[in-house]
Image 1: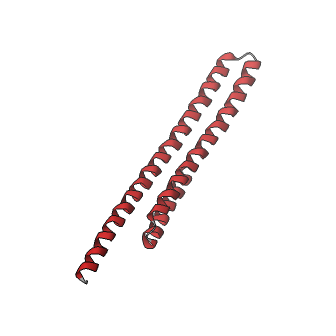
Image 2: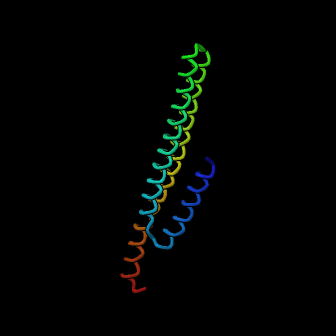
Image 3: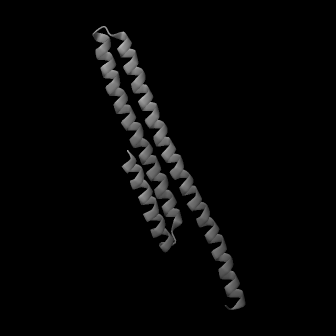
Length: 125
């Protein structure tokens, strides 16, 4: 679980270094946005699989007459699913904020690059 987060953060740093040299921050922002969506979907799918497993165990317990255990297992699966969904959403929001900051900075750079170009053109520098 933590290795996925570390891989995503390493990807962010590598892409930002590459994009900084290439000057293409818009592409980096889109890649981060897609990566955040992909990670959120992975966590959502993992939570759904675990919840289905707990639902099957709860069904088995209910068929054997142990309704207390069935309710406990069902609730536990729902809690795990909700926790994984929240974790995926949290990572997605962090990557969305990072991509928005990169896109904002790219707009700022483009605006000021044009101003600097006009200044050098007009003043012969």
